[in-house]
Amino acid sequence: MTAWTSSALHTDRYELTMLDAALRDGTAGRRCVFELFGRRLPGGRRFGVVAGTGRLLMLLRDFRFGHDELRYLRDERVVDAETIDFLEGYRFSGDITGYREGELYFPGSPILTVEGTFAEAVVLETLALSVLNHDSAVATAAARMSVAAGERPLAEMGSRRAGEASAIAAARAAYIAGFSATSNLEAGRRWGIPTMGTAAHAWTLLHDTEEAAFRAQVETLGVDTTLLVDTYDIREGVETAVRVAGTGLGGVRIDSGDLPIVAAEVRELLDELGAIDTKITVTSDLDEYAIAALAASPVDSYGVGTSVVTGSGTPTAGMVYKLVARQDDDGAWIGVEKASADKASRGGRKAAFRTLDEGTATSELIVVSDGFEQIDTPDRHPGARALQVPLVVNGETDASYEGPEGVEAARRHHARVREELPVRALALSRSDPAIPTVYVDADAV
Image (cartoon, rainbow, N blue to C red; front, side):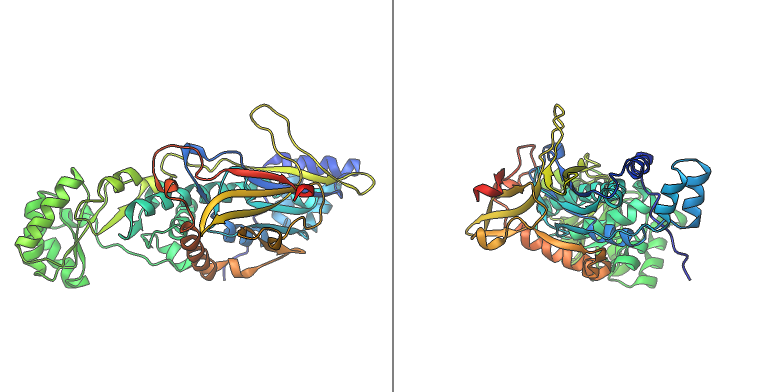
């Protein structure tokens, strides 16, 4: 039986010291609206992909302060006795709405809206940001790679380039954004992602000859396996592979060299040897640009490691978690916002819609209100698609977004909404967001 693990200390100390002070001055119970959003799309990306929502909901369920967590806080004198008592009974009882996992987002998109008392909402900041910033960065990079690959399948194989927990999360995010498989078995077990993998160069080096290694692999895995042919000389490797497995060999993998040139040479050689149906998989430090450069090459599939699990040069989505509305002492709702240079936020509760013209996205429409009540509904925006869904209601999470079923639903949703992107969004060069973000006051709608 697996021991229960709390996620409550997956947080920054200042969240608990703010809670400590709020309990003392009486503001802890004020109703508040926090919003998670990105001010910009980092790396000159033209769109972002929301990922991590299902993981966050599962972690939220485990956001409980047990004996070990409370003892640590007490021993380290992080907070006082009154706050320890409060945390012992902590349960998030508010509401969370947000973009569906797999959804596209743009600057200012209210990706997550957390509504509750200050005390119960402020402590979720780090957990929400650590999950969504990482997973969304990976998913955005993966989506760009999927666009570049077209109909050719992509496999995620970057576990050795990430922390052990991040590797599992990255495999999940990449699958949602268009990858078809992962090399990580725990990601397969936990999230239902198809797994793949055959042999590394160590397998060939273990044997006295390349032929001996190939024969052992074929005897174990069958002729439909994929043989790694670049441990020594690629041409000799291909010839040996076909001699051992026959013309029905499933595939060969190339992990080095000038891939466009090598892939063409390997395809020509396979065809000469009669292995016309043998597939070619390429790996070797691929990113979206390298994949795009191989578009005209006779490649059948790609394996991507480092670049996808690290966000292809953009390891975080740059999202922030800000208080945007609260009640005053009389119970009236007011919008609040930062005015800091280059870090300003926009106060008020938001409703978000994607305007469409014959199925193509034209803008991110955000309707802003100071109030706490539902401020807008889809029927007031014909031709637009509502972007927010309830994720947590009165503290109860919607389990349909969790587990393997939630992953598959997010993957399907992403495939659908990516079809809405205008053509300019599919380019890989640095640019402005593919569609503008338009703010409208609720009173003006």
